[in-house]
Image 1 (cartoon, rainbow, N blue to C red):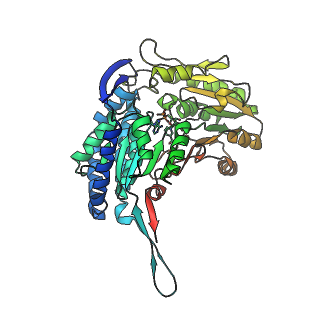
Image 2 (image 1 turned 90 degrees about the vertical axis):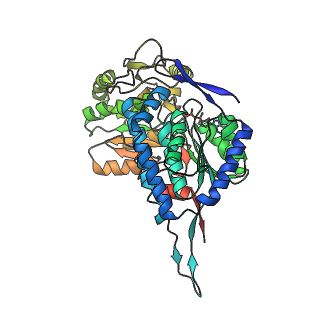
Length: 445
Ligand code: NAD
């Protein structure tokens, strides 16, 4: 069995070694989950609901422990990490209301009756990236368990600690053995086996668009169900009629939160020409005030990047188009300061590619049509923001931007009770909200 050494991104020091499952061990867990499915799917709806509420309550009593673990493993700010652990609890509570409400339909037909059922799929493989280890795991397993499936949860190699702990807490809450199985391992071994082993009936993947395409192609072989939550390059569109100071003050949080390692990060800022200079003046002040520091501090706005490798990738995008930068600690740890670029045009690499670090690009636009065209000039379509005081324009532009999650005069993307997912190459299917239940059931007529 091989191992992987977890590194604390804040100090660059090793934390502990984690055993990685091999192919045979993965198949053993898959078989265990398939066996558990036979009883889990028959658990009475009210009892399944109670177990999920118990799981939520056990998570709730471990919020601080889980949050500290995430700061250690992932370098998330302590404030974010507490929210992330709380999000797992909230998502479990939300979907604990699903088992008794998993309605089918009665559809009028001549000479008889027609009824539909929402049937569970069976064993679900949930593959999670390193940027939000807790929430993304929870979005997958809560809806899948509520609908009567059993789950294999594969955390990213870099960030398995909170997933492992959540697996233990599930057992503590009384979720039966084999129902939620955490399988730390390599994507190319464990993740790939979820795709190729026919006992796994669905793969719910969150990660890069490149790996997601391979998973979709692999699933096609067995017509295996697949949900994909992939990359993003979201636009933050600021019109001249907006409160420019408020837009500039909120823009750093919209892109540098989690050190920019956020699929929803508003990494392309589009500002109407007439207010471009005014915006940049305020923006420079707000970027310089954004606190990149030890993530254990309550005051931290962002911490380090996840790894030296990620730091190298992100730094390679920082070219001679830098307008200004904020500050970051020096010394050990994978630090990159908040950075603002002024690319030459929309063809710039930094404008088109997902950087996944604290780097944002700004370009001007002339009018509404130009803003929409520039915003949609991307292979991605995950999130986006529109700043304007004109309600009609807000609605028009929100409908015209090809993206799964738009917000007006704010940067909110994720609420556990509303659907989340991408257009175009940002993904397929939806997590959270009522939609997610359809992702983990088949309709039987
Ligand atoms: P990644 O694609 O490298 O890895 C994601 C997960 O897939 C990991 O657990 C990895 O081990 C596994 N994996 C890798 N190769 C695999 C294979 N061949 N078969 C099966 N599994 C495999 O992504 P990452 O670097 O961990 O995460 C960053 C990416 O995730 C970014 O592109 C980001 O935009 C995206 N993301 C998307 C969302 C969303 O909801 N749309 C949310 C968070 C992150």
